[in-house]
Length: 202
Image (cartoon, rainbow, N blue to C red; front, side, top):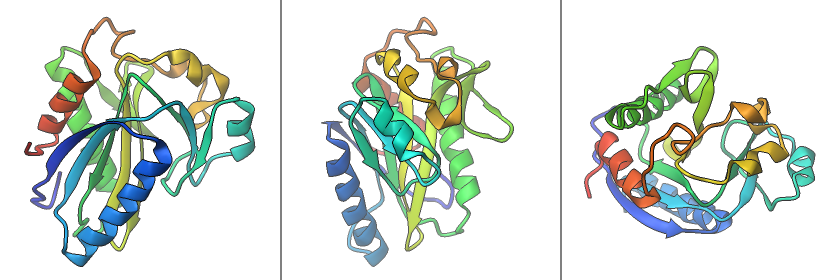
């Protein structure tokens, strides 16, 4: 990440969304106060549709899946087993949220390239794409100029959950995963590789 930020990383396993959200808010306050170090948390969530600041809660409820409202940017997305979720929590000293989003995309693109998968960006759309298919969703929040929330990269989830709503307002069929791209990798192994691409220390 930019700004010479040195982060450690930790794999947290499967954590309920609201628990992880509370953990993030607590860590944000500690980082802002200078009593905790920056961190990249990597984890899975149980099934949940999250509603970002631009999302439609009613559409999320119609999915029939558990719903959680959140302060991150973006619309609706799904989290669940088989997906690596990453929460980089650090001071955004340059106050450049746009650059922060591009940095997250860049780290994920580097990791995909190491797997032989050609990830990229699409102008005007946040996230990481493989051709016309979206493999990673990104939505962040900033409080006291400390970042939280982050990204979700589809490793080998049940993609049927995305077809219950319009993820980020897009056609559900736009979503893809590493498994659909013919790449077999365990979720925890994927988390380790992503952490290295972010430059995080174990």
